[in-house]
Image 1 (tube, rainbow, N blue to C red):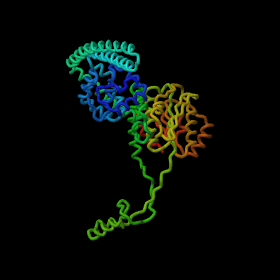
Image 2: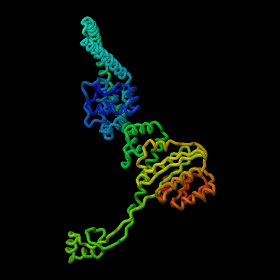
Image 3: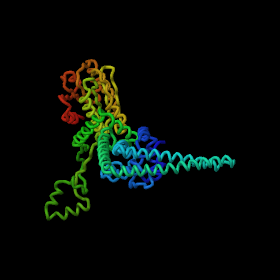
Image 4: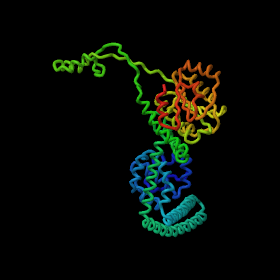
Length: 490
């Protein structure tokens, strides 16, 4: 395994650290590939250990180049800032080491980099000689033939001589590297600080954008480390998904806050008068006792004895609610701003469905044969990969309304609960047949009591009127439309 932490590193590690690092390597092909291509062998594992461990310490016997780099790194205030998001979180630490991999080499001026690579090359050559000599020694010890063993011992002595000469060369190269590093330590430190500040910014942005895809929301199934690493890679390398995540993150916060302000307690009614100490439900006549100094002591005594007269209230549990189904127009004309905006709305509505435990679905549509349906009966079970797939999917086709409406109505028909919402977002126009509207659509709508909220961007709304209960017509992708949709939800 490349980068295996069984070797001596620049950071002191224990068995748990090594096992954790090796598990990350086994789980993530991206980390494996990054380790194979790292500029200084073993540096990624050292950076990871420094970010992961609760109290990392420099290993004074570690490789010279990595030790000097890590000493410089760990002196920076930004390194401590980065550790706030990575300490004892092996995958966040792995992402941090990915962020810093190339930047730490680039922090060194050309002459220092050259000297560093020369030291590492010589260290590898020396290790190969020592390993070969050790293998010969083990073979010689196992040989019953003394003559063959003697020949191996001669080869061992030759290897040891080569190793001694190489150690002198390595010492000279190490001295040259140390001198070059010390001479440029100021500029190296500034570059390392900039790299760390960039890594801190990436870590914070990763955290915010991952929430748009369900990571860290606290009420879903655990997200595997491999999924987190894969999601981070997509967010860092796919500008389009990154823009959708930024849009969705802002919209989700607004949507959840707005929805939270609605009454969430079940309705109640007075069914009796009883005794107790619930001050919120005591009768007004009891409060009069507290207001009169002559009866105040009587009120306090009855409160202590839980004998105040109070209303006995009974609440009614809110019944389950139907799904939220978002129909996304993915015709070619929506490419760009409209697509980013409508998928931001879809992810915001997903967050509401997740919180309110409502089934959720997305119907991607273009021309008549272009349809792709994603369903989540329990949104909290959705994986980030599935939500990223929703964000990335795009037909770039034509426009047909009837096919996605049929899919949405079928989802409503199959749902366990009534009063669902279909949110139909489009920037185009299309005809829906009377046969469908007066037949299946009307039947399911009557039985399931769902509503259709249509958002028509830039076009006349006449084509959506026959099937819409509520219509929004934003001229631009604005926040007011999201607020409108959320207010309209059942």
